[in-house]
Image 1 (cartoon, rainbow, N blue to C red):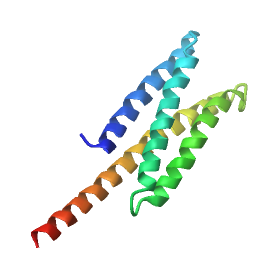
Image 2 (image 1 turned 60 degrees about the horizontal axis):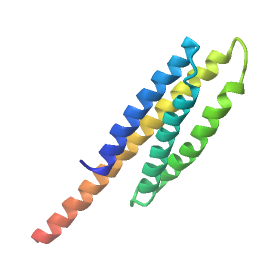
Image 3 (image 1 turned 60 degrees about the vertical axis):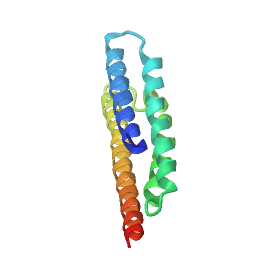
Image 4 (image 1 turned 180 degrees about the vertical axis):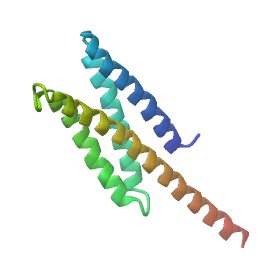
Length: 131
Protein backbone atom coordinates (compact mmCIF):
# COMPACT_ATOMS: atom_id res chain seq x y z
CA UNK A 1 0.00 0.00 0.00
CA UNK A 2 1.50 3.33 -0.98
CA UNK A 3 1.93 6.31 1.33
CA UNK A 4 -0.74 8.48 -0.26
CA UNK A 5 -3.40 5.80 0.06
CA UNK A 6 -2.45 5.15 3.68
CA UNK A 7 -2.85 8.85 4.49
CA UNK A 8 -6.23 9.01 2.74
CA UNK A 9 -7.58 5.98 4.58
CA UNK A 10 -6.20 7.11 7.95
CA UNK A 11 -7.57 10.65 7.56
CA UNK A 12 -11.01 9.31 6.69
CA UNK A 13 -11.08 6.99 9.69
CA UNK A 14 -9.88 9.67 12.11
CA UNK A 15 -12.34 12.20 10.68
CA UNK A 16 -15.28 9.83 11.11
CA UNK A 17 -14.24 9.20 14.72
CA UNK A 18 -13.87 12.96 15.30
CA UNK A 19 -17.35 13.56 13.88
CA UNK A 20 -18.80 10.82 16.08
CA UNK A 21 -17.30 12.36 19.20
CA UNK A 22 -18.31 15.82 18.02
CA UNK A 23 -21.90 14.68 17.67
CA UNK A 24 -21.56 12.95 21.02
CA UNK A 25 -21.11 16.33 22.68
CA UNK A 26 -24.81 16.97 22.00
CA UNK A 27 -25.65 14.21 24.51
CA UNK A 28 -24.17 16.53 27.17
CA UNK A 29 -21.27 14.15 27.66
CA UNK A 30 -17.85 15.76 27.64
CA UNK A 31 -16.30 14.33 24.47
CA UNK A 32 -14.74 17.66 23.50
CA UNK A 33 -11.15 16.74 24.36
CA UNK A 34 -11.17 13.44 22.49
CA UNK A 35 -12.98 15.11 19.58
CA UNK A 36 -10.22 17.72 19.47
CA UNK A 37 -7.54 15.01 19.62
CA UNK A 38 -8.90 13.22 16.56
CA UNK A 39 -9.44 16.54 14.77
CA UNK A 40 -5.84 17.46 15.50
CA UNK A 41 -4.68 14.12 14.08
CA UNK A 42 -6.58 14.89 10.85
CA UNK A 43 -4.90 18.32 10.72
CA UNK A 44 -1.52 16.68 11.32
CA UNK A 45 -2.11 14.13 8.54
CA UNK A 46 -3.08 17.02 6.25
CA UNK A 47 0.11 18.86 7.17
CA UNK A 48 2.31 15.82 6.53
CA UNK A 49 0.61 15.06 3.21
CA UNK A 50 0.93 18.74 2.26
CA UNK A 51 4.67 18.75 2.95
CA UNK A 52 5.09 15.57 0.89
CA UNK A 53 3.06 17.16 -1.91
CA UNK A 54 5.05 20.40 -1.65
CA UNK A 55 8.27 18.53 -2.44
CA UNK A 56 6.72 16.70 -5.41
CA UNK A 57 7.34 18.22 -8.82
CA UNK A 58 4.26 19.91 -10.23
CA UNK A 59 2.28 19.83 -6.98
CA UNK A 60 3.96 22.66 -5.08
CA UNK A 61 0.96 25.04 -5.12
CA UNK A 62 -1.35 22.31 -3.86
CA UNK A 63 1.16 21.60 -1.09
CA UNK A 64 1.26 25.27 -0.04
CA UNK A 65 -2.55 25.40 0.01
CA UNK A 66 -2.61 22.29 2.17
CA UNK A 67 -0.03 23.68 4.61
CA UNK A 68 -2.04 26.88 5.04
CA UNK A 69 -5.26 24.88 5.47
CA UNK A 70 -3.59 22.57 8.02
CA UNK A 71 -2.44 25.56 10.07
CA UNK A 72 -5.84 27.30 9.97
CA UNK A 73 -7.83 24.13 10.71
CA UNK A 74 -6.98 23.69 14.43
CA UNK A 75 -7.17 27.45 15.06
CA UNK A 76 -10.70 27.56 13.68
CA UNK A 77 -11.61 24.39 15.57
CA UNK A 78 -10.51 25.85 18.89
CA UNK A 79 -11.98 29.30 18.29
CA UNK A 80 -15.31 28.14 16.86
CA UNK A 81 -16.87 27.87 20.34
CA UNK A 82 -16.72 31.65 20.79
CA UNK A 83 -17.78 32.67 17.28
CA UNK A 84 -21.38 33.84 16.88
CA UNK A 85 -22.51 32.57 20.27
CA UNK A 86 -26.26 32.34 20.62
CA UNK A 87 -29.10 31.20 18.42
CA UNK A 88 -27.03 31.36 15.24
CA UNK A 89 -24.10 29.30 16.54
CA UNK A 90 -25.37 26.34 14.52
CA UNK A 91 -24.06 28.18 11.44
CA UNK A 92 -20.54 28.11 12.89
CA UNK A 93 -20.93 24.45 13.83
CA UNK A 94 -22.00 23.66 10.26
CA UNK A 95 -19.01 25.52 8.84
CA UNK A 96 -16.78 23.70 11.36
CA UNK A 97 -18.07 20.37 10.06
CA UNK A 98 -17.60 21.43 6.43
CA UNK A 99 -14.05 22.65 7.08
CA UNK A 100 -13.19 19.30 8.68
CA UNK A 101 -14.55 17.33 5.77
CA UNK A 102 -12.80 19.77 3.44
CA UNK A 103 -9.51 18.73 5.04
CA UNK A 104 -10.27 15.08 4.31
CA UNK A 105 -11.21 15.95 0.73
CA UNK A 106 -7.99 17.92 0.31
CA UNK A 107 -5.97 14.96 1.58
CA UNK A 108 -7.80 12.81 -0.96
CA UNK A 109 -7.02 15.18 -3.82
CA UNK A 110 -3.38 15.47 -2.82
CA UNK A 111 -3.09 11.72 -2.40
CA UNK A 112 -4.55 11.03 -5.81
CA UNK A 113 -2.38 13.60 -7.58
CA UNK A 114 0.71 12.40 -5.71
CA UNK A 115 0.00 8.80 -6.72
CA UNK A 116 -0.64 9.85 -10.33
CA UNK A 117 2.61 11.83 -10.32
CA UNK A 118 4.57 8.84 -9.00
CA UNK A 119 2.97 6.53 -11.58
CA UNK A 120 3.97 8.85 -14.42
CA UNK A 121 7.54 9.05 -13.09
CA UNK A 122 7.70 5.26 -12.79
CA UNK A 123 6.27 4.80 -16.30
CA UNK A 124 8.82 7.26 -17.71
CA UNK A 125 11.66 5.41 -15.94
CA UNK A 126 10.43 2.06 -17.26
CA UNK A 127 10.11 3.42 -20.80
CA UNK A 128 13.62 4.90 -20.76
CA UNK A 129 15.11 1.62 -19.49
CA UNK A 130 13.35 -0.33 -22.25
CA UNK A 131 14.78 1.95 -24.93
